[in-house]
Image 1 (cartoon, rainbow, N blue to C red):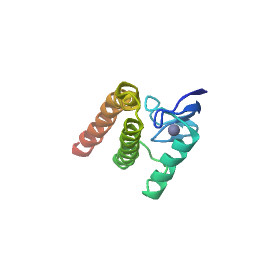
Image 2: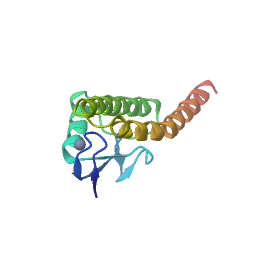
Image 3: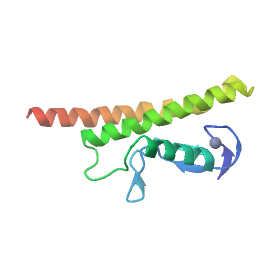
Length: 128
Ligand SMILES: [Zn+2]
């Protein structure tokens, strides 16, 4: 797919990026997707690796896995905000520059609610 990278806004080949990764080839959080150029995609996966964020492992949807996913999203948000400021500094119109951040926020509304529900399930199970 070709289009504008959600991070750097450059036009070209885009890769589908799922910040919380995949398991058995399927995204753990299908709603949470970004379309990034290969450079930005590589930068994000490298940042996760440098920060010690591990790939998903069994069992998933546990409190520990949800903590891992939150760390993944913190990297994504940090890089998205950095990309926004870089775009603004390069003279990109603010409404264009903020597009990636808005798309990420919309996806996070659904994903964060689901993670909160998963944590509630664990909390209720621990109290039973
Ligand atoms: Zn990019």
